Length: 522
Image (spheres, rainbow, N blue to C red):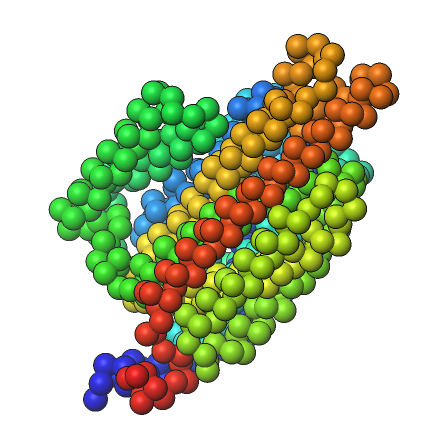
């Protein structure tokens, strides 16, 4: 009997999930949606936060970045903790902490306080993410059911990122900027009530000892690398940024070497020898890097360039969310019969078409074009995220699901945060360069500096200028921002093409669940 046939026989004998597991999946989708919402909910609130708290451009980036950075930094540790104390228990702890931190963030009185509360939200979010995906791995043993369950989970995550601006827009239309955080509070209360009733508890029966030094090394290395890259992208080849980046890489190397020596490592490096795991992880990270970087620019384009209100801008993200739901259903239907690499690669090609549409933006009357582009790239990215994640969690034993899920989500959160930091910084550099070339004559130095820093700053100072000069500055600034989005779209196309190549090279031999033995041998 071939190993492939043995794998199929094991899959066919796996127990099927029942009603309790499917209801439990609905419970798990709730924190997943909220965690991803917190990555994007502030995008439309940025102008309001800028007006209320007066953050510097650096503080503004940290308000956006720190949440994703700390989620990424703590995921590995929290995944291991969940394996030890129980994944449901960690989920409940995280839900309570996330709710409390959301209330504190809503009433932040300064930029630094908001950065700090966003950091607390990131740590709390890191306790939730590995728990949800690890519980899915433990609840759904049948391959086909697990693909469907992960499709629901990933769709919740993606929809959360998309409707974050919509929810934020609705709140900003009626309340103050801090209200965008309070949306999470009732949902977390619901999770705390329903979780113990509907979710089973799972933990590794032989988890081993938690190595605190490894946990510290993983956090410091991730944070140092992210900070170094962020500063390099923003300010160029500065010595201090290079030193921080190098320090992070050194810490990361020490972390990896330590894992090889430990009896109970924080990360099982043997996982990376499995092409299902490592190939899917790398391709997912590249695709997420491209998408995460464009989300911020697209959301602000709707509001600051096209002049939509916060709620209107959020409302126009609904077609994108609907496209993700449709795509997830199609992927679940096709996955049993079509090799995952073919579905993922085809989807990534469609995503590149969506990105290409953004290169045709003109800075005016672009609403139909930008909504179409968002729908197309969302349709295209769904197979990559659903099937890539399914391959990752399906490659490991259920007892190791917490750590494996944490590695996967660390990669995704890190890539999304880096996308905002790096691609966002590229956009900022392009914007500033174009503004320096086209800035109207006769502007006071302080006005010119504010206009060159951010688009929001340019629009704010333009409103206080004489009508003709203010209109000219507004037009120039919006054109510069449009050019920055066009450049970043080209970057997104290139990154997505890399992800497609990785999928075809590394994953093309992985069969579909229903594929015959003869077809697998070809």
